[in-house]
Length: 90
Image (tube, rainbow, N blue to C red; front, side, top):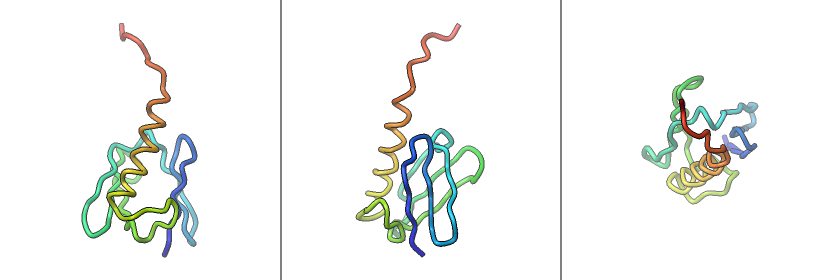
């Protein structure tokens, strides 16, 4: 089964032949290489952890789990850097 992961701005959209789901970027705590061409997306809620084989991801084009983790981390970082500085907490 092949998957497409799309950056939608505030979320990542995971789509396959069976349907799709969204994972909000602010829920993602970490994206990392696990083993055997697999990445693990840790969330603080909802799903617990999502495991994905990089070879089954056709969008975005990637060269393996390390590369896919870098792409997803880049999308998340760009989103989080868009938040304004909240200033001092009183």
